[in-house]
Length: 289
Image (cartoon, rainbow, N blue to C red):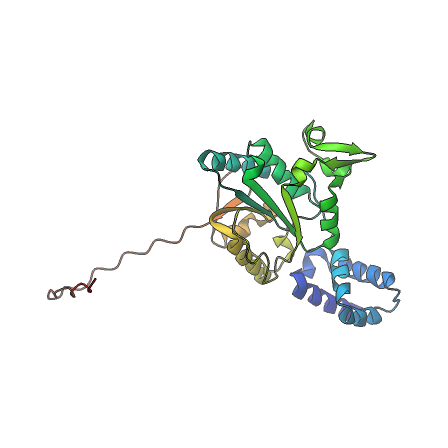
């Protein structure tokens, strides 16, 4: 059993960077057992063979391993900082469009919280867009549906749900005005073609995912984030990921408890040491114009 689960863990790491140590081999074993049962395969060796023969099954296994844990306005200080940055951008903007990215977006609570934050900061709908990307097709389906239960609103202020949602039986449906600001699409953070051809983003939320990668994969993921960001862009990470950013040429914006970073400025070129005293030499002639 251990050897097969180790093989599955290695496959998951190659597929989307998951470090098995971050969730434990027992979690992977449970996901394998679940998928084997769903496929009608009692023998895990048979499931392993099926996994290689049916490309779609790998996605199903990823769905079983990825357990989203999110809610609206999670870590409120990050959204307070986003509102502050958006207000500053709006004051100096001359009709531009603020581009935001939620990666991974899970079931949509984060990107919709980003859109609501910008609306409350006074940014007109025509002046911002939010892209929401996740590897899980099931999570994206739920995000597009935009209907949530009570647990999605833990910690939100009184009136938040009433302002932006409509009651539908025992669930709450997000208003269309907010939904239209968010574009959901499938993608892999470690995929070489992630968002290729898209303009760079002003703000990226990539929170609580780097902790599931080993160091080499973290570095690879940060290179992707740097590629997706504008030179002056801002990335928000989770609390336990802040030290990682500081070790990889990012600098904190020092907004309290927001864990917001920009890429560090290129180091200044050190002045050349004075040359040894020599006989003066005439400078070369200027090139012809």
